[in-house]
Every structure is written in C-alpha cells, then in structure tokens.
Image (cartoon, rainbow, N blue to C red; front, side):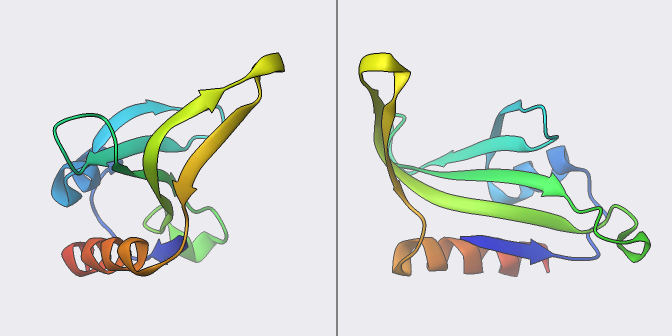
Length: 106
C-alpha cells in the first residue's frame, strides 16, 4: 500500500523513531528500508520503504512516500536466486497500520 504524507519537518530518522520503526538500510534509489516487529521474532513484521518526494519544487523535501506491506514470514529463496515473498500489500491489517502512521505524523 502506497501513501504520501506532506509537510513533515522531521528527518527520516526522526520519523522512523516516532512511528516505532527501525531502519535496516537504504538502497540505491534513496529509499529507507524500515521494519516494525509484531512479535519477539523477526516475523511477522510491518515493512516500509520510505523516500522523500521530489515531484515538484513545492515539495521542498517535506513530502514523504510510504510503501507499506506486512511480511508474514521470511522470503524463501529457491533455484536461480528467485524468491517467494510472503507479503500482504492490502487488507484491513495493512490499512490499520497505514492509518496509525498517518495519525501519528499528521
């Protein structure tokens, strides 16, 4: 599930702490890879790729684009490096988490 939040004055590090996510790493596209565990183990967990929007000059780096999903379990890697991803991108659980993040940040 993708959503955008505008006019945020915090850094990505501050945003991740505020919403209870831990930054794992960043990728070559400038996206931050963040997770929020739901139990003691690594799975299930909410998983967000977060990036700043540069859609227009009016954004002024204060618009953030969230790509949120729920990882049910660790991806399974098979032959030739192909993996099966066990993520949920839609549904009531993901929508509730999206609403929680929006409420905290707005």
